[in-house]
Image (cartoon, rainbow, N blue to C red; front, side):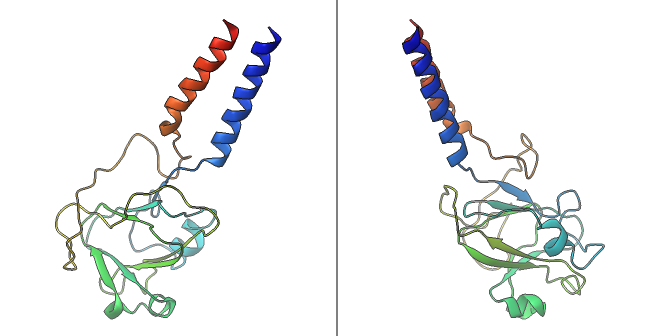
Length: 189
């Protein structure tokens, strides 16, 4: 009986370690329910939406909009601050669009349509350097053809099984959990 209890305690401790040290990629819906649009406040995306979020390598940004918008990326903070649309690389003009964060550091996104960027439709994301999540080779993906002449594009299907910005899923650890349960059960027999 004592042996079974020790086995149960060890399995519980192992489960706690696995779940606290594991991180899974998270899909962040840009703007949450507001979506990717001209915000009511020019600071909405960077000072309101992005606050209290941690972005890691492997995470995805889901851009959703209606109307005429696009998602473009610039490489410098100066181009971002000045809404330099001439330096921007348009990633997609079709919604929805999903972008995988594949490097640490700052990433700058904006809309190049009219004065949308100057009206606040821009986002700076700082990808955390302390931890990374497992990832596959990352490329921007969008339904249809890319608008910037690149050839790396594939259709995406929006996921509706978990709400945006929810806790990471630990589904890949299901088999490990089942194995640990079997180990605990066998210690009682």
